Amino acid sequence: MIANLKRISRDKTFLVTLVLAILALSLGTVHLRDIDLKTLLALFSLMVTIAVYAKLHLLRYIANIIIEKCQSVRAIAMVVLLFSFLGAMLFTNDVAILTLIPIVFNIRKQVKLPTIGVVSLMTVYANLGSAMTPFGNPQNLYLVSYFHLDILAFLKLSLPIGLISLATLFIILFGFSKAKIAAVKTPHIDVKFKQVVVLGVTTFVVLFGVLSVISIWFALVASLACAFWIKGEIVAEVDYGIILTFINFFIIVGAVSRIPSIHDVLSTYMAHNSSVFVTSVGMSQVISNVPAAVLLSKFTTRVGALYIGVTVGGLGTFIASLANLLAFRQYQAFSHDGTVKKFVRQFTLINVVYLAIFFGIGFVLVTI
Image 1: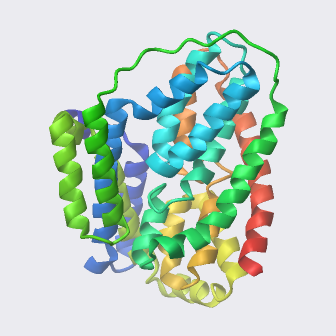
Image 2 (image 1 turned 45 degrees about the vertical axis):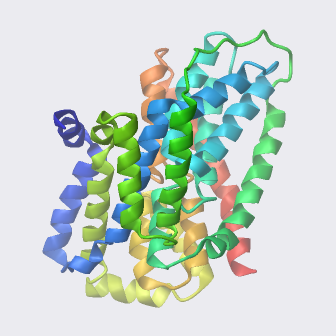
């Protein structure tokens, strides 16, 4: 618990949003209903479940098995990018990044790998892959809860941009060398079958709770029971700063949305799919896509345009998505070769290119 308090006190995102929440309270009013309890419970249940996956190293275990069979840089790139995309779908974009970036740096010790490009593309595809499922990222969780979307309604929104994203992933692989390389060695990881089965069942229970098939309280109890059964300390290791940051977001949005001038401008401007899309993309670049989704949801019922806007809006600047900042911190921690500034330049360039491409794709999707 003390370690968690120290981590929260050093969490810059939480501290910035806390200051902004205090300022927002002086500008507007906040109601208790502004804090979406179901979203917070769903987020916490999911975070506990994901913490169990992280403790068991399941994603790393599967990735290691496949990487050892790779015979070219292109094959390695395909595995890490696909695992980034699919891992983000199932375990969130943050977990995909935290799991796979250390693997990339381990591979780099054995194979000449364009690390900056790979890590940058992994982050892009973690953001895009996480958009495919209701539980892939926090903004999806919020939108599903706020607009009461069932799984079919959500997939109707996510499949078009998700399949296009996957197609671009396979296209970009042609930029990597297919020359033969020596076999890559990865660390051995022990996985216990019984724990995997229990975790799998728990995951379905949590997902049913997120999708409102069952009570979210039942899902919360199931996730906590699973965590305590596997290892009690897991619950203490959950990043509670994210929960507190979300509460700050709700306070900020509640107060700001009631400022008359902002309310009038957004109410007038958010009347069409195209304007909702453009506004959500632009706002994501400045305040990040999670608070953009929360704020703009108060002014529109056009959930499809908003969903695609904050999905595309996660590309671009480091601020656009919390996953982008996480990737930067991971690169900073593992690189040790003085290439952080070069990473910032190339990461930004790659993200801006993808932002431009997907802005066009997204605009077409929301206007057809």
